[in-house]
Image (cartoon, rainbow, N blue to C red; front, side, top):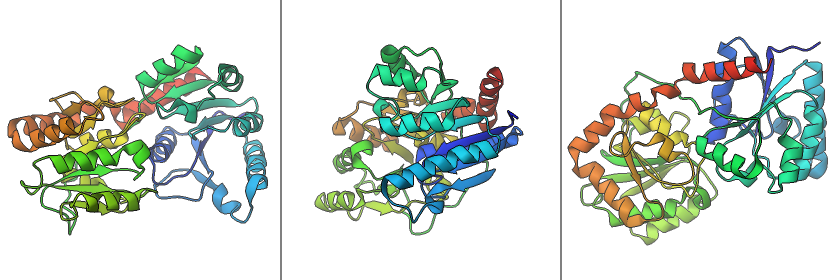
Length: 362
C-alpha cells in the first residue's frame, strides 16, 4: 500500500559539506510538516543534527569491499524502501558515475523521485550525454536546482520539462555570541572545505597578502577540513603569513566565528548556491565574493549586503577587502542590510515551497 507521508532523503552523508548540511535541514523541514523522514546516507559521517530515522550504509557495510559493497548497499536500499512502504525519494547525492546511476534507477523503480543539482559543475550530477541524461531523468518527478542560473544552464543543453529551482534554507538566530577564545580581535573568515581546486584558497591567500589588512592588524581565518590542508599551510608559510592567517579544523558550531568576523570571503572557481554567504548574512555579517559560476550574484547585492568582485583577480579582491575595513559607512550599510537581504530564505518559506512541490505531485 502506498504511503505519501514517508520520504527517503538519500545523501552522501550528514557531515562536513553544504549539500550534507542541506540534507539535515530538509529533513527538519519535512519532519516539521508532518512527514516521516528516513535519512539514507552512503558514508559513515554524521556531524549535523537530523530529524527522523537514520540508515547509515557506511556503518552497516563497513567490512565489505569493492564493487560487492556497492551492490549490497543498493540491494539493501531497495529492500528498505519496499519494507517501509516509502514511495517518495529525494536524492541529494552527486551522481558522476553512469553505471551506478543506471543501477540506482532500478533500485528506485517507479517511485516519485526528486533529484537535486547542487553545483554548476553539471557533470557531477548529469551525464554529459543528452541521451543518457534523458534516459535517467526525463521521467523523474522533478529535477530540483538550488540556483536559477544552474537550471537555465542545464535546460539550454538537455531541454528537460520537469525542472524547478528551490533555494537552500537557513535558520535565523537572535542569539549574540561572544568571540571564541584564542581568535584574533579583528578578522575575515572563510569556512568550508579546504579543497583548492574548488574553493581556490590560493586566490584568497594571495589577495590577503596584497591587501592592507596585515598593517591594520586584521587577520584571516580559514575554518574547515579537506585534502589540501597541508598545501594551504605551505602556501601561507611561503607567503610569510603565519602570524596573520590561521587554519582551524571544521567547527560544528560555526556561528560564533561568523558572527564576530568583519566579513565572510568566498573565492571559489564555481559554486551552486553558496550557503557560506547566506549563513553569514543570516547572522548579520557582510560578505565579499568573487562572481563565480553560479550563485553569488543571486545572493550578493554589491555595496548593499557585501561586495561582488571579478573572479581570478587578486588585486580586485584585495581592494574589496581593504574597502570593507576602510569605509566604515559602507561596512555599516552592508551589515544593516545583511539579515533582511536573505529573509526570503527562511526555513518556513523554503519549507512551504517544498510542501507545495510535493503536494503538486501527489
